[in-house]
Amino acid sequence: MLSTKVEELLNAQVEKEGYSSLLYLSMASWAETKGFPGISQWLYAQADEEKNHMLEFVHYINDRGGKALISGLKKPQDNYQGIKQLFNDVMSHEQFISASINDIVGLCIEERDYTTQNWLQAFVAEQIEEEASVQAILDRLNLIGDNNMYMFDRDILSMRSASTDSAE
Ligand code: OFO
Image (cartoon, rainbow, N blue to C red; front, side, top):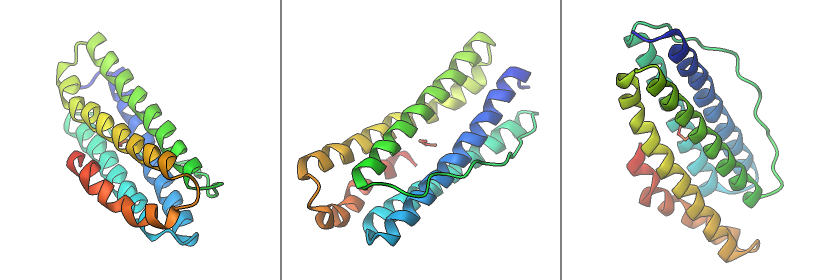
């Protein structure tokens, strides 16, 4: 059985994972319309992954005797100055999600909910993988500068299979 406080934070995470999915979907659509098929494919896959994370939280809350709540989500940004700004925003968002997962882990320890704390470890590991994957993209973008986006767009999918796929 979940405590009220843990259930509330898990439900807040349902909303955050849902928003993550919408955010990456919006980014994917922007990249697709700007002529970056590789980058948009990376982001569409990321959006799917985030939707699955949301579902994992929904099922966990319900399986543990709580009630998962689906709230209205705010509209994500739909325009970006460029690819580097977009991936900087991805990194900031992933860091925000990592901090949010850590807050739930901290509350579980306070509430002696070791079952949920244990269940969350997959998400702790996932966030390490995701931040590392986005950092590798930012490092690559810094190396190539602003003018070689064609090559970067072609290469980004191989970077995905080398990193994030293992965290799904
Ligand atoms: Fe939900 O995996 Fe990162 O944000």
